Each structure stands twice: as C-alpha cells, then as structure tokens.
Image 1 (spheres, one colour):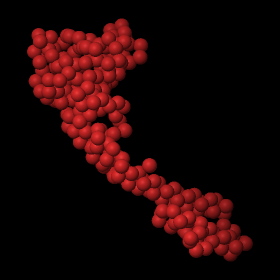
Image 2 (cartoon, one colour):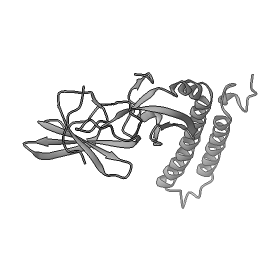
Image 3 (cartoon, rainbow, N blue to C red):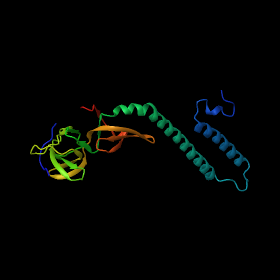
Image 4 (cartoon, helix red, strand yellow):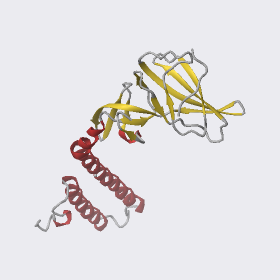
Length: 226
C-alpha cells in the first residue's frame, strides 16, 4: 500500500370552450370535471336541510380534495411533456456526450491515462489528503493535496515509479486542521461517458467505471481527449 506521494496539478362548442383548442386531454377532462364539481356543490348548498346545514369545514374539505386531484393531473401532464422532450431532441442532444468526460463523483476505470480531479476540501482546512481505493475497497495510495489547488491530476503511479494496474479506482478527500480530521468528501473526477439512456423522466449516464449517474449530477464536461 502506498502512503506517500504528491499530485499534479420543456373553434370548440360552448360546452368545451373553456379548455381551449390547444389544451391537453388531461386539462380538457379537468376543466369538464371542475365545472361538474361546481354544479354539484351549488346544488348541494341550495338543497341542504336548513335545520342541519353542511358545515363550512366540509365544503373546504371537498374543495381541498378536488384541488389535490387537479394538481396531480397537471403534474402528470408536465411529466409527460418532459418525457416527450427527452425522448425527442433532448435525448438526441445528450447522445453527443458519449465519448466526452463528465465531472461526477463516481469511480473511474483507470487504463494508464492520468485522471483529472476536482477535490472537495473542507473550508478552513490547512491540509488534505487524496485517498485512492481499488475495486475491492482497499486503500492503495494516499497523496498530500494543496488546499489552494482546485484541480489536480492523479497519474496512477506509485512512489517507486510503478504504474497501477488497469481497473476501477475511487477517490476521497480527507481534510485536516491542526492534524485533526474535520471532514471527508468525494473527489469528483472527469470520467468518460460510455452510454446515455432514458429512464422515466430522467436521463442516466453510464461512466467508464460502470457507475450510473443522473445527467443532472454532471457539473462539467471536457472533450474525450482532454
């Protein structure tokens, strides 16, 4: 195990006019249902027993229940719209990411090419160490970091000059203040994208180490040879 080293730097008739010609089926149904609900509520108020009137809280409960259903229908329509966009131009655009390097906190498949990292060092730390672990979870190297350096490069070389074997490696940062550990965090790495896949309303990226991340988790991109 290595313990030392450094790093480098998306015309209707009168009964449906309120829905609009461009309304979605869900919105049209919702408008029709809302009109029916109001007529029923009005009839209930007009025909209630004056000696045993409906409590105001009961009306409020009925309105709240309908409002909840209304919101769910609108949410479903929005999700469908987002999914349609992703299935069309959005997913097609993201497919151009394949082969690029995405900055994400995920293991990297090391094949001899140095790995660029953006370590997350705790504020106030006066020293930090990059901890490198292999696919088995064993620590294979600890490298001192310079807290002032936002970007570092892991060369994948031991202190004796021997290169590490091809495989999946993970990175973590330990931050210290006066030799006391004050925090541990990930070290996001630029990781090649090998697949883009739609999963429901989200887009998933498969990275070189086999890890899958949501496209929204990617904070930066670089060319595949960068």
